[in-house]
Length: 238
Image (cartoon, rainbow, N blue to C red; front, side):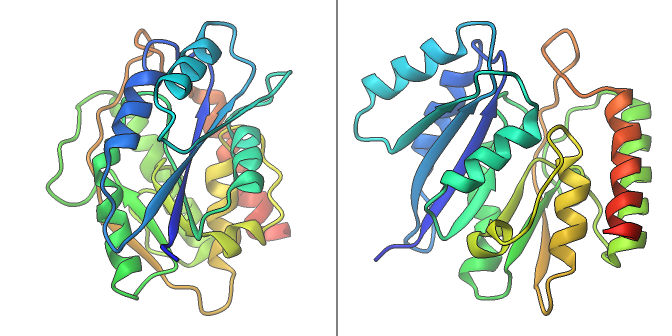
C-alpha cells in the first residue's frame, strides 16, 4: 500500500482562490510513492466558496477530495480540528486556501520523512533561498517574537513557529488534545507536539507569497496577543 498524505485546506471566504489552490494541490506529484487525499473544510463562508469547491470536485472525479462544512463560523483552528479527525492518511499537512504557499513544495517537507529522519517537518519562511514577498515590518517582528517565546517553552530552535506549512505524522497529531479554534492553533500544536517523547522535528525553507489585507489576509494584532496567551498557557500550565 502506498503511503497517503492528507492535505487539509481550511477555507473561509476564499471564492477567488480556492479553485486555483485545489488545482495546484491536485497537480503535485509526490515523492516516496505518496498518494494524496484532499480535505476541504469550509468554515461557514459567506461567499461562493462552497460552490467553487463542489464545482471543482464534480469536474475532477479522479481527484480524491472530501468536503466538510461548518454551519457556524468557528475559526481556522476549528476547521483544522475537523480535517484532522477526518484525515485517513499516514501524514497530514495544512494548506491555506489562499495563494501564500506553493503546494509544489510539499516534497521539500516530505524529503526528511522519506529519508527516515523526521516525524514532523516545519516549513520556514525565514530560512533558505526561496522566494519571500516583502510586506509588513511589524508582522515580521511579531513572528520573530512569537517564535522566540514559543521556543523558550518548547525548547525547540525553530525559525518560524507561525508557519502554515507543518507536516505531521498522523498518529502523533491525532493523539493530541487540541483546543484552540482560531490562530492559536499554531502555538498550541507546536508546544504539545514538542512534548512527545523522542519526537524528531525538522525544519526546511519554503517560499512565501504573502497577501495584504486588501487581498484577503485575515490574521490581525488580536491574534498575536492570543498567540502569546497560548504560548504561556500551554507552555506553563498544560
